[in-house]
Image 1 (cartoon, rainbow, N blue to C red):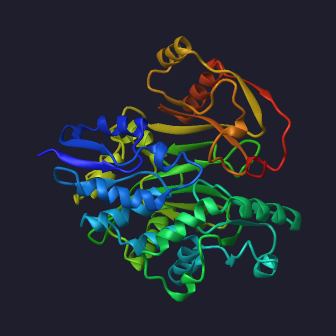
Image 2 (cartoon, helix red, strand yellow):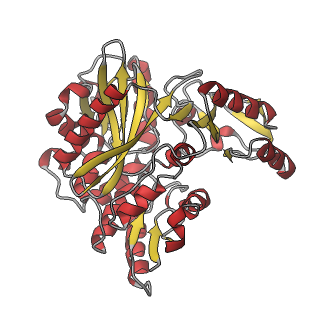
Length: 438
């Protein structure tokens, strides 16, 4: 029978990826609010999304077989509540919060994998004495206990930078804190977490030394399975920003196994089951030490084409299998390429876009790079500062997915594509503190 699958935050790119799956003939995808309704907004209307989702689903004239999503907040936080309401397979809401609430997550990690995390503390950015709450030496990171995509995350090296970060967080944190506080009302919180609302921040010691790697996996009936490891590579002007994700990881297998062991200990501690996850680590080769950065209770949509290029299938299939209550059966190295990458084309200063490719130029690029997937985020005439949901240090103007049989060929293909891309920008004067402070 055809399965009715509801996707919270459905967009055209990921819908095309899912429709290309071999099993897609057995699925009927339904949009449970589109991407523009859940992500591309100045605020996240989580109460409306939750209540109207339930109303729409209750009036659907057929079986509801799965409710899924691949976006971070608020989609990842709403999904377990919706699945619970309709008695569908899902991790518990409390287990999800122990992944998503950065301070709560660190408290749990401190109990079970203490040797893999940095020093940390909670900070109220609205306190006049916020600096007294921080018992870390500079430099350190400060970020809200719940945000998304590195938004409002700052590395601070002195009092002046801390003051600037606090100013930016105070101005913009309510976009995340208010909807997160609403969702926290659905959970039975321990006292030490109930006192920490969504406007609080976490300060953490720097752990960005070494190589970063993300494990993609799932938990099903108590089994924790990792099916892929992706390198997160930072290059360019500001090394806090990703330049590309590359699959498969070149980190040694023995190190990846240690990461898997830490992952399993944490997920079993919080009771996470019947859901996908991705978890980010750093490996310091010189000290042979791994450190856990964060964990997300969803697949990474950024990695979907990479798995298709290398393994032969987008890992949307893992998300769909789990949503339907099935054990995922994911292929290994059955794709057309040995390596694949998602390149993030960034600019580190504000600019006005004066030219973008026309339809004929897009067609020629696709003919020259037939397996490439390109997503341009800018339009002619716009300022880069108009882009939504950027990190604190750069503007992402495009993403480009490519596959190749060697790293040299992969990088050469990317360089050639940029050389042929008819995109032009004129620099604008702007603050040197980055887009989040502009």
